[in-house]
Length: 175
Image (cartoon, rainbow, N blue to C red):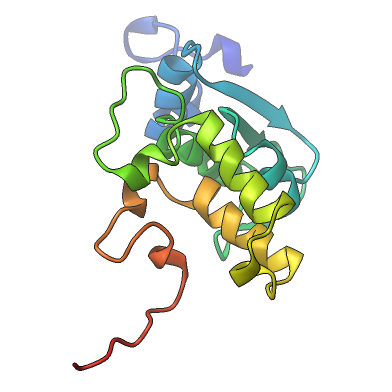
């Protein structure tokens, strides 16, 4: 029986099996109409450099991979799990440019605005400050990728500052 003709209990139209996934359900039924987000389905693999180029925008790629498995966050994922992974990132980054979200710290505020995110991209990739000049372009791109894509903006704040989550701890003096 074709997927569209399947019936659930009481002969009602049954939703496809993948609708059971809370991530897909939330992203496709609730977030799809959010005018502050733009879903970008893509069959083209994206690089860290690609994410750096559009990371200041509320653009959320959804990888529609055709390979049997693909790596994401150090795990192999099936095509459906890969799309769910991208939708989970969209959910965690939905605070960027959301007018109803109020940042609770300066670190969070620096990553919740497209304009400020663009400033970060320009600072780290276009006008590299002297202390960071010794880092390679791929290292700076990876740092920016971590800031823009891998964690929610509110997860960036802590007692050591904005970048401490992706840099090793600096030993402190005893006196």
